[in-house]
Length: 120
Image (cartoon, rainbow, N blue to C red):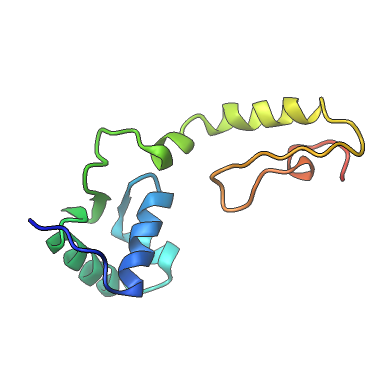
C-alpha cells in the first residue's frame, strides 16, 4: 500500500505517541496519552493503517517496520534503571559551578537535582 504523509494533527499526535511509547501501544494507552476517546483512537489508527504508516493489531497498533527492530524509541526505554544509575554516579563527578549537559528521552531531561545530591 502506498504511504502518504499524515494529513491531520491527530494523526501526527498519534504517531508521536507511538514513538514515545516504544513503537507499539494498546488503544487504551493511546487514549490516556492523547486524552481523546477510544473511538477517536480507533478511527485515527484505521486511517494511518490504510496509509501504510502503522500496523493494526487487536486492541492496538505499532509503527510500520518497527516490530522486531529496536529503533531509537524502543532502545531508549530499555534498561532505564541502569541508565539512571549511570546518571546518579556521573553527577557525583560534577563540582560546583561546572556546566554539564546530557539528554534523556524522558519528557524532561535528567538534571542534577533529579539524581539526588546537591541542588544547583
